[in-house]
Length: 277
Image 1: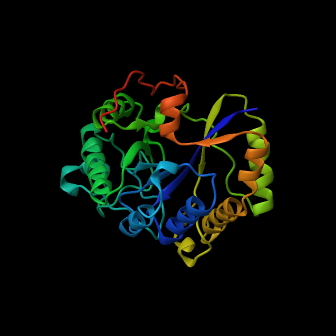
Image 2: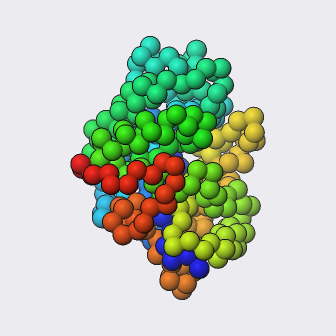
Image 3: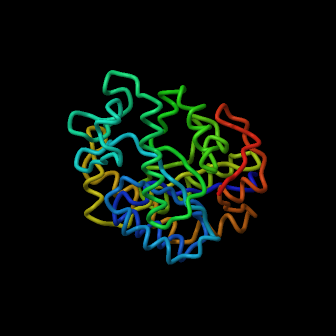
């Protein structure tokens, strides 16, 4: 059985419901070890104040680089002046709901401009950003971004998420109908892993009417919020922590992985990177 899990919660800053769920899981439980922050999220400023009340040696904080705005009733706006990043925005000056929808290739230099602005925002909020990952994985759609983002992460002294998993790798079960079902699916999935370590993702939210905004043509109103609330309930039950402890499975941060584990060797790996921060 696998011995270590790199456990991550995404979309911190996207809503108060997400912020509170991730904050409570960090404060009271021991499963989540990485928090990916959405600089463009409407609740990022308030969320930063929550994170700063916690001992950051217990988990890593990262930048969740965002280039899409996939929900119908909730939009992400870029940090950069839109006239400077025309290949990244729609006519409404938001990010597109999905990659490729604009009918043109995105410009890597514009991506770097926007990611610089997002990183600057998180730094200004006083967060110690140690790694970066990408929302909706644009690298899958634009593989030419991989070397560009490798170099950017290297220059910024950030741990690159592509160093720690294979593109298109299954990141764990989601969209389960109850806490009980989620526990069964997660433990069965972890039981089937054979590597020394594996990256896993969750998107917990406290039960809230905010969850109604997380909907689009593929996800009916209320569905995403319900599933994410079940992830939160599973985390707060402590069952995953107890199960992992019983089976001697460590939950680790990217910073722990960088110090102690051998990288996957994926196409995004850039061994020998020197940290500058």
